[in-house]
Image (tube, rainbow, N blue to C red):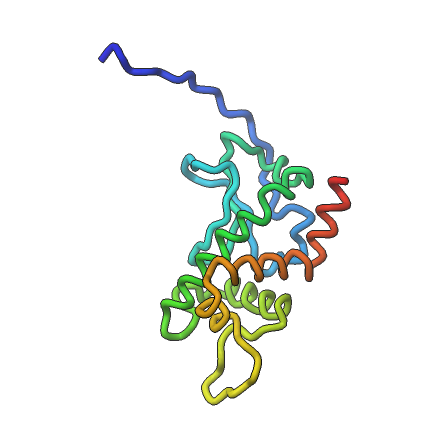
Length: 171
């Protein structure tokens, strides 16, 4: 076993108290959480569709909790992380008979309400609803999960004015 490569272990930096939510995410406080991942992750920051609600997870090996507040970094991880969350929730909703599936906590309800508000579309048809407009789930079935997830992420970022805030702070 002389041919094993041993990588140096870099000591983990001391972490300060975790910020419950970065200040720029205050408009999504009803549904989003930011947590430090309990296990080592492949990505420094990722979006996760947890049973209790949508969350951004960061790996403390790469990112300190104070770094999550950095606007210059948020512009890089916000959209891809949201895509991970939205893609998972759409896939689950399309596979479920009720159009929701296992993501049915209060935080997920708040998330879906914000998506409905931001996109101007209903999540799914109610029984007996014969509305003309397409719903989010119908659009995901028709156009694909990735396309609809991108539409939702764009709508969330624009309608919450998050895109403007991130652009103005990094310019």
